[in-house]
Image (cartoon, rainbow, N blue to C red; front, side, top):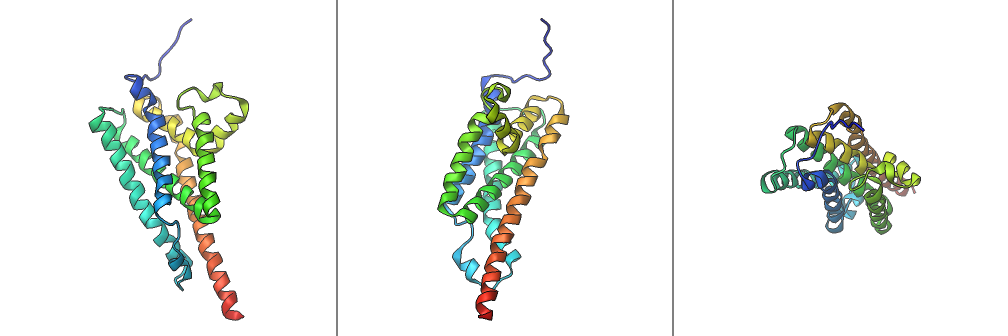
Length: 207
């Protein structure tokens, strides 16, 4: 049997790096909503436009998400010696994924409240098995194949593998719309939440 290697990790640690990088970003985003309110009661009670409230609620999360991705990349590159084949693209994908995860988790918690945190944990558990981080996702049970396709972590793991190991970048590009799509969806939910507040205020004023 002949085999052709398209890309290869330098060592065992590099082989698991994409999965644990993505896992760290998700956990970091989840810990952020433990200490920072997704949308403050004071902001929702104000007369500011919904767009301004949504932007003001997102900016602290975006700043921490950016710092988290930069710090994580610096640790694995300069501290642990990981040498991605495409360092700037790797950093860019980490930044985009961190912003997307943070936006998604922020909006789930803003929409559902405390039960939203349980939903985020359930999503994490599902993605631990379906992302293909430790074993090929194709070898998992069929229901997890669906989870792999619709949940974000698996797509980011696949993209990082191509960028870190130097494989063909075509498939990596196919995974990039997922973080951007999540970020857009999170923004839409945040705006809707703030718009609901404006509608309630308008009804109260009319009454």
